[in-house]
Length: 494
Image (tube, rainbow, N blue to C red):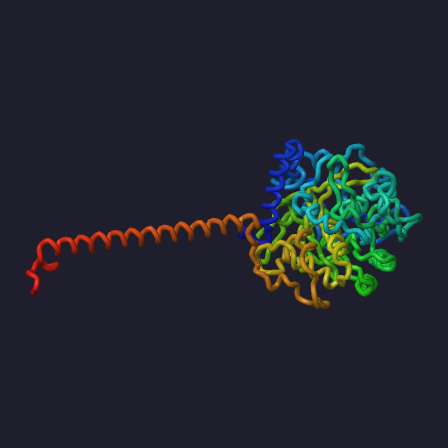
């Protein structure tokens, strides 16, 4: 069922079906959903100390990475198509902040959903859960306070936590990255039909753990994770990865897990090819998320499989997994050419694994909204075991257990007896992509029809044979009565 290593065929088919439905219902909306236009960031991820506005902060550059290696280009068949090209890109960092100031708002907002909504179909489970009662901490550049007031996408559901570098609280988002992530997680559904978050009733806790350029270090991330766990967040989305493991960060991961908070993190930065693990995604207990395009293939340039071939195509500014990468991938989600709100409420184009991690965090909020008693381990197992299979041995090096599936994850029965370090249920399941559900009734009807026709044919043959037999028997009896001979023409014995 799979056309290649790490390629998720079933979700790609779902997107095609969804786009066809959009075409039937709203031709103008479907016209903008045909192909994704990749967008590069506004600067390299490693906005080192020189970009900071106050005390120097260790940048989060990844050794051996190629900044912008995956930038530019386009992925055919993906994303929001011409619509994505109409909006400026949202980068994970803002390297020119000292020269040009914070990211400028854009006046225009999208009036059509992003392709990721067609892919994930979160609205199908909103009657069961919209994430109400669940708090998702966005640990990154902050979240624009305006998004939580008035007609903002997070109105009434945004809590401003601490700012761990610089002055003020987390309501100032100079980069805009944290705001985009927060709205992908829990943005309300706009009246004009624009993009919405996966869990539109979930609450967002903003924790600012970067400088104004978006750079961070292990100490800031560790403090941010602890602050989110202490505030009662059930899910912690860590927006900015760092290259080096650190005891303080590892301890913070353990602390958060013990407090009942699942950490979700990208497997790499948004605009660099990487050849080594990044953190906190590299730690056990953290759900590591990679990005895919709308064709189901890993997003980014030169994504290598274990056989040395290429499992994906160049596109967007997604993090690329270079040859020899050793970090694991747990699940994937759309992360190429998405549409997300930025500071001021306008729409930006978002590409990279950090945005895929936001969609996974939103899915986790939907699951907890319906099954709030799940432990951290059970929640992670649920997301892995209900993911779309890649059709390869699990976990696949490029896409892990597959693409996260909100519909199945929310609808699946609560995990029973899951323990830390347990093998996800996906390991016992077939590793091929199952056929679309709509095909089953068709095949069943065909089988029933075939059996019925076959049975009717057999009955017809049996009836015809019986009639022939009766006619032959009647013919023999008639001849014997007229000649007085037996059937062989011999005179009958007296």
